[in-house]
Length: 584
Ligand code: ADP
Ligand code: MG
Image (cartoon, rainbow, N blue to C red; front, side, top):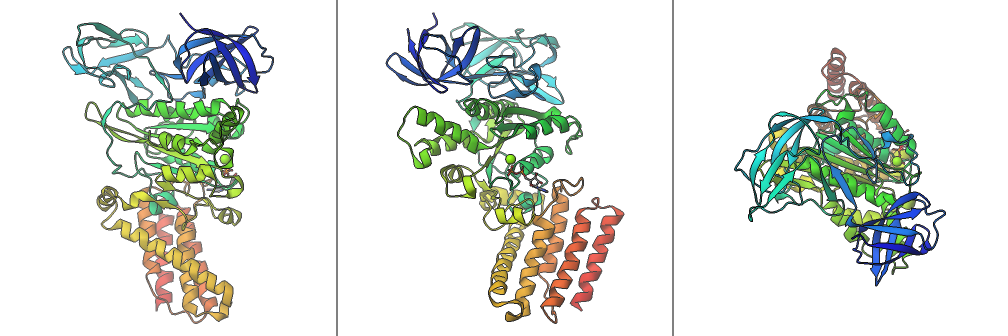
């Protein structure tokens, strides 16, 4: 029998419920007001009092209103048909609602129960299987969606029967599995999983050993993201976090992209809804929407469901990873999630940590990031979840708790600087503050040696050094004046500007420049580095700046030209000529 209860106290969206039976931590319940039921999650239990967080407005709720406990935690429904969908944080299908504005208490099915899928078996009678073993597959968009042993069935089973090739609904029995005691279990195409628990159905979690191309030069060339890696983008309001994440979502070399819009403006998500069905994925030629799932909990939606949205996104990511796919999960912004945690903890009058965030903020963030990763699946294949979040530190202060905690958890740090954004140096990724720890991984070094070129990492560090020295030279010039320093200082400064303008800056709104494939990045970077390694003898600082300004202009034209086109080649020759004239 289900536990029920009565509302006994209301503190904004936290409701104290007097329960008539056992209640578990993180259990889901429904709070009734009139004939509307609102979903809520148990966040604390003291005796027979359950403190529940309502994922909706509690307006009109009264003491004595009825509550029903569900006996399970917040779950996500996993089945074919998730791709291309737009969900809210509780996996309600936003398409089935009126626009982005969800009526209070509305609940929709996350998947279609009537659609038939063309199934092909992968397992045979007699096979030994366990949680996440592949039993068969259906084609979802262009992805081969694996039908797996449910993640909760962690014992060992023997396949008794598998459905034949044919069309089936997701609730049809696709296989029967026999356990060690001889009991049979029917498996369908649909399963549920509690979002706050990591899916651990894999045999190994090796360190990332490949990079994930994003088409964004300052990331791929300077601070590469690993496939199965983690990273974050902190930056003040307006610095370009969302534009950068959207660019990555369009271009990244991933099979499935899950975008969690968390507490940010709704119009940004509407843009994706409009744009993605028309844009083409540069890696497969299919539309971007076909590989994308949007989880949307924008600033106009209930604050409490923000937390659910990031966990739902991650869990769906882990599900597709178990099919042997490369998944990229992105969340914008994780600060809004942390703020929701702070509100909740304050309402519960818990002992606050720094800046009134919960004491365990750091642990919550690192547990979440640790769910990403490259894994070896039970069948021997590999799959990955790469996670990239944004952080919006108040006033751009990188010492605040969410940024600090995330820095401990994530391996790539793409700091957007106000200064760069103000001077329109986009993307505003600060070349000196930012880093990718993957550059230090021997596996990654080896991968780059093999797939880009030998000792590529050394070339990357050489470029970083030039940028660093350029900044130092610029500081000197600013103190001593243009004439107060040797002309070599100017040369050093302008070499770093060359790298900045040609490699680190990229126009996210230009059809060609927006996406720069690795082969092109390599060529451009080596060309620029080659010039930086030359010594020029300029008559004075003016001659120096004039030369580099002209050079930067040519390079930028090249960045705007189609790869290997006549125009592109023309600029390349012009640059060679221009430089050789100066070297004479
Ligand atoms: P944030 O999410 O950090 O608040 P946005 O991503 O919304 O900031 O960016 C704010 C504005 O900055 C954009 O509307 C755009 O005009 C400009 N911008 C950001 N990144 C780029 C870029 N890579 N190229 C050109 N303009 C950019
Ligand atoms: Mg934004």
